[in-house]
Image 1 (cartoon, helix red, strand yellow):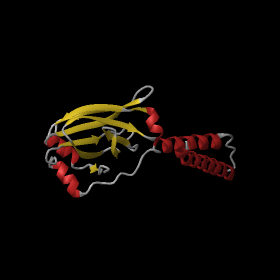
Image 2 (cartoon, rainbow, N blue to C red):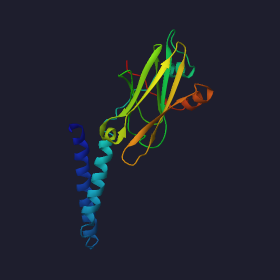
Image 3 (cartoon, rainbow, N blue to C red):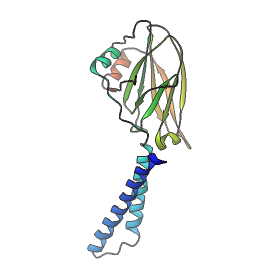
Image 4 (cartoon, rainbow, N blue to C red):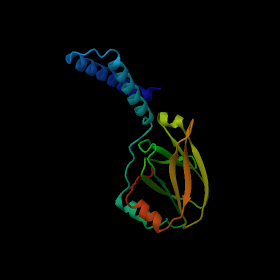
Amino acid sequence: MSKYIPAIVVGFLVAVVVSGGLTFFFSSAGADAGYLPMIVGAFLGIFTAYIMANLAGTKLGKAATPEQKRAVLESRPEPGQALLIVYREGFVGKAAGMDLSVDDQFVAQLKSPRFTAISVSPGGHQLSMAFGGLAGKQNKPTLEGFIAAPGDVIAFRATMQMGMMKNRIVVERIESDDALIQRLKPMIMIAPEA
């Protein structure tokens, strides 16, 4: 609950400032606004608090170095390892950070459009994606299994799909070819956490 307190405080302040400003504006114009300033102020305050609470779990990811990005774009896995690339696209929820974990180890958080890449050992792995903050309660987390072989380049694309009650994270495996590299080039690469 404590991570939502700033959102609630800012929402309350927005409601007070907007209500007060509209009341002053209408009274200085000699008009009776009635409850309109309170209604507009309350709506904008609640909306502000809601958006901020959705973003409460979002962190500022550290961008990868140009060398790290170049190595990924050249599809160079480390010797005896596979290269896992995960990228996020789409407009829905693009400002909310999506947490990526491989085998229950946190890797990075991606906004849209961003990507990250890590070396994985040969064998079976689990890629999980979920949101933090209030956005986490509105989106179903997802889990995707994959098998890596030495020298493989494995790529997944994540997008959001709106639902009636909950949104869901849609994950699809993408061919690691020139089209993928061209798609990743303009994106910011987020450095994976060590």
